[in-house]
Length: 191
Ligand SMILES: [Zn+2]
Image (cartoon, rainbow, N blue to C red):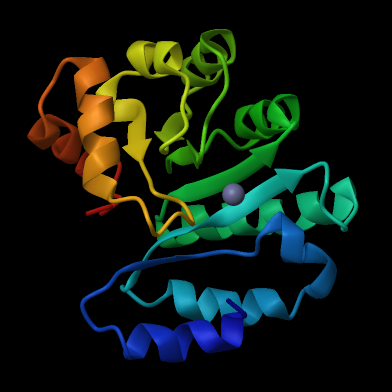
């Protein structure tokens, strides 16, 4: 959704919380002034997280341009104390290097993670949280501590979040309340 429509949409949905970000697919349409509008939204308490933002090798914008907007959003994440939800396609090494460089206080959540346990364990070791949707690698879920685990439907409105919660809770051998509590620890209100 374009940034200028986000605020009016949020006003018409008083009981809903939002995440807002400049997605790598949209970076080629954004100019630095978009960050000013974006920052005004972030000051609003209805916006609980920043994202999706990040890197995608298939996006139109260059990697350098994507990096410019991602790093600005990281700085805003620290300023407004809101976690970052990261869209990352074939760019895990870059995102790990950036996390090392910024050493953020806020959570960096890799959304829609479908990778193998080897990659999951590397990311977890560097302090990332991993967010799992309907398609996930069960072995990666199994090694993800629940306080570094999020659950999402992403854009799949036909799938209930409860269905994914149940699948993840079964893999983690825990109940849904424990997963909910862990998600709140991440300061993300996903249900
Ligand atoms: Zn994404």
